Image (cartoon, rainbow, N blue to C red; front, side, top):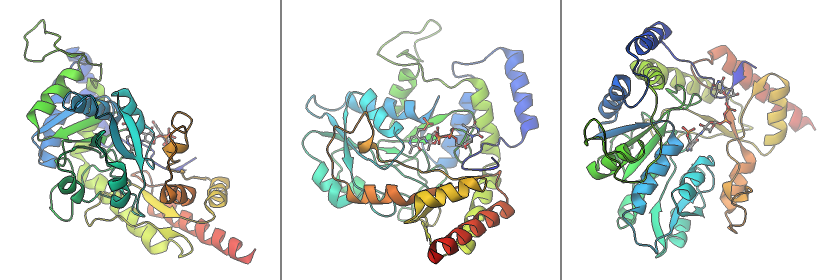
Length: 367
Ligand code: T4K
């Protein structure tokens, strides 16, 4: 199928191949070589943040940040508040770091519902993990309101975005933020994640934790000073991300143009979910429809593989024992559909998809 959500495309493949040849020639395949260091430097510069720590994927990045928080809270602070409407990796990271997820409801822009957050935060809360989903941002109010709590942002979808109120790049908020560069993400490569933070202590911890707990400053034989994991990216992954970073302006412009064509051509029978900030990355095109499942099937039968992002986590097998009432989460997840976008999607593809959705709406209204 050509019309899919998130087909990856590394731009400037000639340069990428040259870098792969260089990696083969130098035999530095992993363990934070020059391409990984270069990615970290470039991301620090793009996002205006003090530290960037590259990891093998965002799930590991979230786990590492929460493992750090674990060292800073009391034994009775066992809970992390997250939305249920997110990719399941968000909740898995909470469990893997030794916390219990507490699910919070969301608003129509997919951000945390502050009223419900007030109900969920208690003396057991160690941290809040808002998810900046689909190119929308959670309000910075969370940081002022809960200034005694740790806040780690799952910014897997939020690379190269600016907060309207502070006009600061996403990447420097809370204790840390974690970005995904999975192949299906904006500027994606071959599995990748980056932790960004202005906290030196957290950055040092993350550098050790991604490398089995070895202290990078301990000399050629290293010294294992804590528990850790192997979350290092390899050099080929880093070379791919470097190529994407060098093309970031073109990539983001392509996503923006796709968004405009959808916005101008989708029928009013579906709700077009506009980003809640001026400088979004437009990395996802999200619509809502009361007839979502039928619409998905109609698109699929016509060669378009839209995605149902996301199923609510509190209804999933590993989590469904958690009895939560999250009415808006449940409503939204029954209506939401992600349409194809990305650098592989042309204006003609989008017009074709919009026409299909219009036709579907006509068929539905005549029934
Ligand atoms: N937090 C949030 C909010 C997230 O959305 C995610 C990941 C994370 C945390 C964790 O980030 P990472 O640890 O992954 O860095 C995808 C991704 O696996 C996942 O990264 C992503 N979110 C999630 C939303 O979507 P699938 O199952 O939808 O992907 P898949 O394999 O069906 O691919 C989508 C389409 O792209 C397919 O139609 C085929 C095409 N494709 C995909 C890949 C991987 C290709 O053409 N080539 C490829 O290499 O999960």
